[in-house]
Length: 279
Ligand SMILES: C[S@@+](CC[C@H](N)C(=O)[O-])C[C@H]1O[C@@H](n2cnc3c(N)ncnc32)[C@H](O)[C@@H]1O
Image (tube, rainbow, N blue to C red; front, top):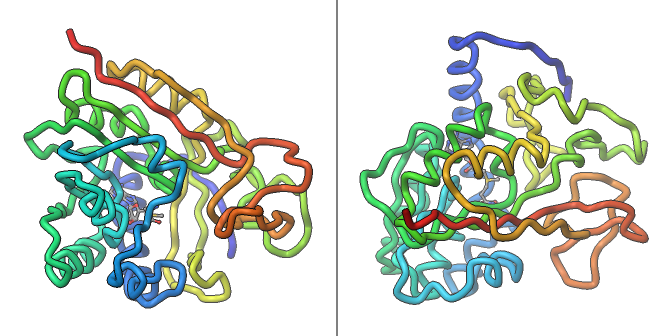
């Protein structure tokens, strides 16, 4: 994978987003058929949410929930199985087609809408807004993302985010055993890292044949965007585990499906909770 950087104007920004959309559309059939997503297990009744997500959001029975960047819908459908009135949003038309088909097959009343997250406006509000794992790096403008969260929450509504720690991006997708080699600057978040040929985490040996554009957002930028949108941050926690293995020198956690680094030298993920103030 060849990576480069450029600053870009508004036209380039639109082109980067539509490039990412095409790349995500192309990933959808691979992901739907993959062991990683295990759609068959989901059809048999499994949930596609981990303990950090479930404990972070809490009891959703009878609550309306908006899931941003829901991909093929397994997380959103899981919230429905747990009793939420759930709606999933994603900009990939192919992902939304898969999600709607699965909801129909399983007889679940989950709604799915196709929308770019920063400009998404559903003209309704929710009790909970949820988004997780591999979401922020695709967004050039976190202030716009946070405004989308704020406008979709009732006063008193709650936001939960689980995400890979931004410092991980410094090492990019190092899988060659090279170890602690810095590849990307932590602070250059105005500029995307451009990978000329994306692969996919469900099979890193595979090339999608399309480019991808990613932005690394420092933790301070995430916190500031959420606060500036009018949300009060109630919890920010850094964790020493991650539910995927972006770096070859990570080791399996004792919990299946989680990875960590020997002796836990630094955080690998973070969770953030916020509430929309009642004015
Ligand atoms: C890694 S998935 C995250 C969802 C979940 N963690 C999962 O693994 O299924 C990232 C999702 O973000 C979506 N996405 C990326 N950029 C987006 C944007 N600007 N607006 C809406 N969705 C976007 C992609 O289509 C993809 O479905």
